[in-house]
Each structure stands twice: as C-alpha cells, then as structure tokens.
Length: 204
Image 1 (cartoon, rainbow, N blue to C red):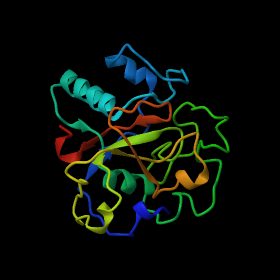
Image 2: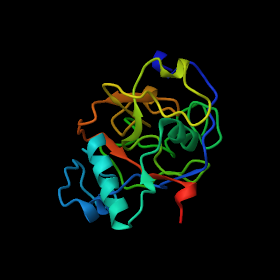
Image 3: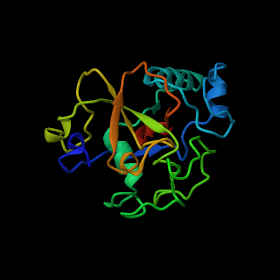
Image 4: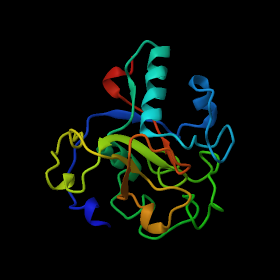
C-alpha cells in the first residue's frame, strides 16, 4: 500500500455495531431536506456530505431517540469491520472480483443502490467502493507508527479527517481493505458518504 498506510500493526477494539449499509438518501431525508447527492435515488448512498454534515446528521439522529449511542466509527473499528476477519488485499482475496465492489471498472462512473453487491464475511455491504466513508479520526501519515494497541482513536487534532473504503470513481489501488485517504472536515464531494456505528454497551 501507500507509505501512510504502514506499518502493519496490531489493534484491539471493544465490541461495537456498524451499519450494514452506507447511509442512504432515504435515511438522510429523515433529518435533512437538502439532498446534494449527484446520483439521485432513495436507496443510493447519500453523497456530497462532509465530515461535518455526517456529524450533524448523527447529532439529530441521537436527539430523535434521546440517546448518544450513534456515532461515526473510529478508523480502527472501520478496518476491523471491513476486513471481516481476513488479512488479504480485499476482504474476498488478493485479486479484484467484480461481484463484490462498485469501482471504476464496474460502476459506469456512478453510485449504485446499497447492497447490490455481495457482502463481506461480517454481512456488511459496500465497505469497499460505492462511496468513501468518513470515520471519526484526524489524519496523520505517521500515526500508525505510534498507534496504541487498545482502541486507538487517532491523533488529537489535525488538518484533515480520514475516509476509508474507496468509491465508484477509484481505481483498484484505492479500494483495498487497507486503503486510507483524507479530506478537510468541510469537504463535500460526490464520492464521499458515511456509515453509522454505535458501541455495544449503549445498545439499550
């Protein structure tokens, strides 16, 4: 992978839940009337959402249920879930397989309804491809050199936020299980979306 994806390191995370699908435009419309997505469709992932937009949506979602359980996953949680117990380039193996992912070679340069491709071993759909998914962490190219083993949260501050998983517009090099990238927290782009997590100890 890229230098800022190294070195390989051990991580342990507490139990958590992660959405089976990327947040859809139908779900987005519950709390936000303004849908800026380039590729419209109620079951398509919502796009053109910044990290700030995702956090605001989650804040409204929590308020609607008088809870604090919903959140973005940490980068460590995201990769654990995306890999689904595998250690290969992709969660299905080391070679591209079009049955699992919307990327530059299969997407016709647009997003597609969530769950249209085969899921990973944990039952999660589109963790690779379709849209990049924002995670909670600030980005640092050197963080993995000093990352703690237990529940790493990323740097305390930074210039960019991390996004994971690649999108429909990306080549194979940017849709692998270890691929990470970054963007400003206020950056809206049609390749960016998100997925929601919550901690197991807040399920009730």
